[in-house]
Length: 244
Image (cartoon, rainbow, N blue to C red; front, side, top):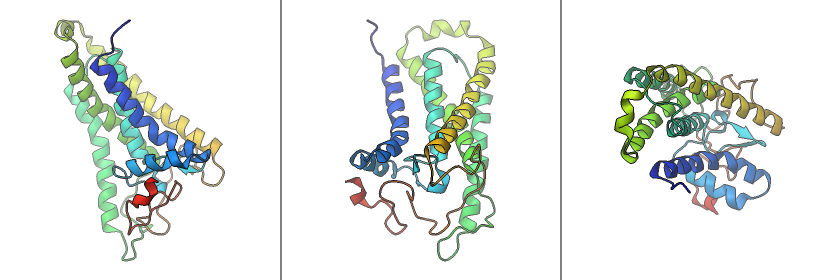
C-alpha cells in the first residue's frame, strides 16, 4: 500500500477547506443548523459573507463569497493538477498574468465601494464600479490557481526526492497548453454551481444563466449572511451566539 505523503495531506486539507462552505447551505436546508452554524461562523472571520456577492444552494448562500469560492477552488485545482503531474511547470510570466485580473476587478470595486457608501451605510446604485459574481469567481479562481501553484510546486519539490532529476524532462508545452485546459475548468465549474443554484432554489435565484448582472446591498450594506443561518447586522459583525 502506497504511503500517503505530505502533499496528499495538503490536498485533503484544501478539499475540506473548500467543501465545508458549500456543504453549509445543504446542512441548513435539511435542518442541521447545529452543523451549519459553526461553519458559517468560522468562515465569517475570513469572508464578508454578503449574500449579493455569494452563490447559493437551496436558497441559502455558501459560507463564503463568490470570489473566495473561486480562489480556493483554483488553489485546490492547482494542487491536484500538480500532484497528478498534469501540470509540470509554469513560467513566471504566467504567474504574473494570473494575478492581474483580481487586482483590477477587486481593486476598482474596493475603490468604488469606499467612495460611494452613503451616510446611512447603503451602497449607492451609482457606485463607481461594482463587480458581478461571474467576474468575482473567475478572477478569484485565476488568483487562487496562480498562488496555489506556487505553494504546490514548493511542497512537491520539498517532499519528492526525485524532483531534481525530473526537471530536464519537463515539457515546455505544459506551461501553456495544459494550463489553458485547466483554467477552462474554472468556467465549467462556475456554470455547474450556478445551475445547481437555479435548480435547487425557489426564492432567491441567480440573475441569469451566469449570474452576471451587478447586484447591490438593498438595505444595510454591512448586513451579513442574509440568506444563511443566523443573519448578522453591521453593528455586530461576528455575533458569537451564531456559533451555537
